Image 1 (spheres, rainbow, N blue to C red):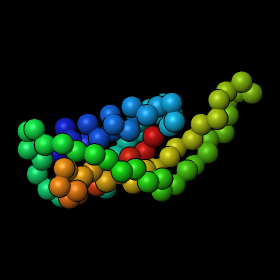
Image 2 (image 1 turned 120 degrees about the vertical axis):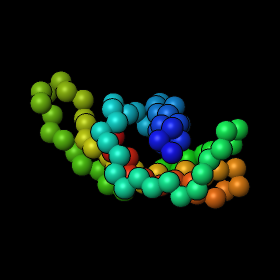
Image 3 (image 1 turned 90 degrees about the horizontal axis):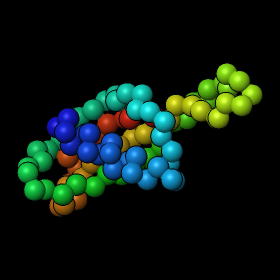
Length: 88
């Protein structure tokens, strides 16, 4: 289960040009709903749940904040295999 979650997180940061992620802040409400066997294919759907803006420490600092993502992981049969909230 945790390997699948790690792979899902990797799929998310692959699109860094569209969604720059500075760090993984944590995972909440993680549930594994179906086994995933070797050779299976997965895909991920991310939905933004909440954004919290952080104050800049200096004038030159880039805008930052915490984003909570609802993550759904599906297998090749389109059945959910896991859900979580990822904080970035």
